[in-house]
Image 1 (cartoon, one colour):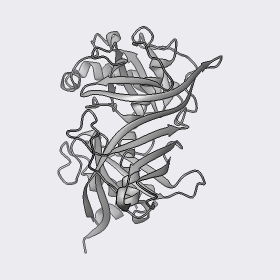
Image 2 (cartoon, helix red, strand yellow):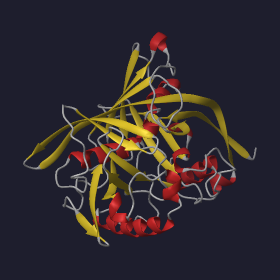
Image 3 (cartoon, helix red, strand yellow):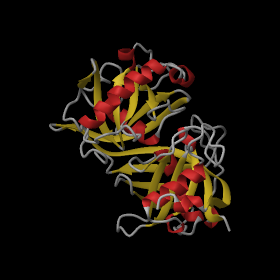
Image 4 (cartoon, one colour):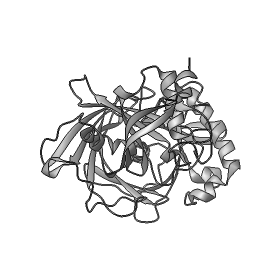
Length: 364
């Protein structure tokens, strides 16, 4: 046999989608694993024509699940961001949209038992160490995907998946503000470098001569912006303690502008070499935290927020995403207790993915 079959589930998680694997079905060696994942996705081609990727970063993601040995978690969630046109795999970040499918996938795989009409799945994000509680709808002893919950960027409605994020501050860089500053200046532009669920270099859109309301297509055609922003991102990566990030998708890039559709703030989120068509779940937590922290580049752009948890609506190209933020502002500044979001997921396919034998030998 020239190809090896590997069992998989294919789910939409939030506004991303990709294969979900049982980690036990994949090699432990990271080099071999990367070759297999690049083969599965079809990395190295702009349409991922020889794999199941969709030609954009939100459809070249992979989730790998296993039972957790931690006392505070049920499932370990190991994430991989696979390249589109480049043959690369980045294990440094995690993905909150794909996380929306972790609970359902774990139950479908038999890694997690159903516990009632709703099943709480305690997830450990292996890449960052964060903990997340996911509440999955499981009436009649099985996952239901149909429901009335809509999320911007995804057509139709589906069953809700409640996500509560814990321990997400400094998961990649070790601190809320990895540079120690509320603002830094890189190449003449003020930025806030922040690490909440995802490390991001955040700036005001008007600092780049942009409105912040541009479409994804308009931004992706603006190569002058990307060249300038990428040069800044590389410097931010060093300043945030991430080292050489030229082949890493972190830190991401965020641009802010005042909300114009009744939200709290408007944002464009970059992955980092293309604009996200909606908004990353992890990115939304960081941008919401930036909006709530006095003295950041968001100051003066934010519509009033009240209540606890504070409901921060981050406007994005396809609508908005609501982040319920439980936080405190004390002598040490902003302190995040938890962040909650509602997403949806859908099982699209199940079966076996065929991996060429060459993928198992290229790394050796």
